[in-house]
Amino acid sequence: MTKHACVIGFPVAHSRSPKIHGYWLREHKIDGDYVRHEVKPEDVAHFLKNFSNGTFAGCNVTLPHKEAAARNAAIVTPVVKSLGVANTLWLEDGKLCADNTDVAGFLAHLDDSIPGWDKKTEHAVVLGAGGAARSIIYALHEREVETIFIVNRSRERAEQLVKEIKIEANIADFDQVETLIPSTDLLVNTTSLGMKGQPPLNVDLRNLKKTAAVCDIVYVPLETELLRQAREQGNAAVDGLGMLLHQAVPGFERWFGVRPKVTKELRALIVEDLTKDAAR
Image 1 (cartoon, rainbow, N blue to C red):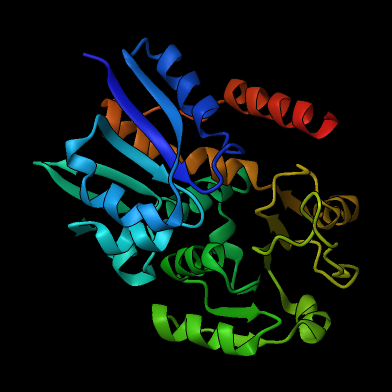
Image 2 (image 1 turned 180 degrees about the horizontal axis):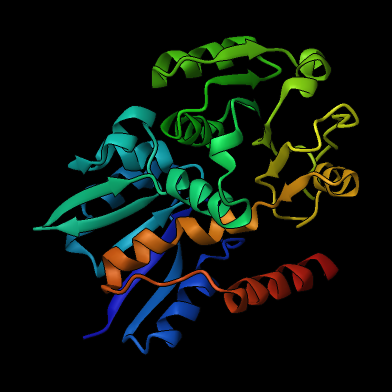
């Protein structure tokens, strides 16, 4: 029997998830499919409450439905309980279950890109205080990073984030970034700044330690100005595509019963798709 899974969002046409999961379905010769399923915000609660009556074994969740996914699940993982957002859903005994695999995806990509990074990271700076920042701050806390700074234009939003996820972190304004750079071991951009069609992210990395790493969760373009600057200085530069690929692994395993691997071939397929999209 064919198993069905999907990604929900609004809009959802931009999602690369069907390409990722389609690759794994072909690789493992599984009788299944994975599609985009657009759900309007006013319809998402009804969709989730009736999920067990539909044809999908599970789904990924993208903006703006991650909070609704967490609220409407009957069973949630500890990370969802802490963060209040979910991106992966599945059914167990007819009950909707929710996880947030962005945490695992971020860590797996860093582990692959810079083995042992967490052993030499005492001071991390996270730019932004949105949904992605929540997951990344949680991940850094899980790896026992001693000092975390959240840099955000709205101090109130950063303070609210810390209060909600109950993780100790320092808060700074963007005009303080240059004073934080010299002691930073890991700099992570979780904002949309630097993304195609968005304003640039103006951060000067000249005073960054040569041993420090820079990660940008933006993957369109694949090499942002921030990463180009880091790479040219000789710093480790980690793009956002790996996080996207790794966060997809747990969901595929839940729905189709096989744990897939993130390979160079899969990455090359998605990079090709991104390149075509950028040329349009």
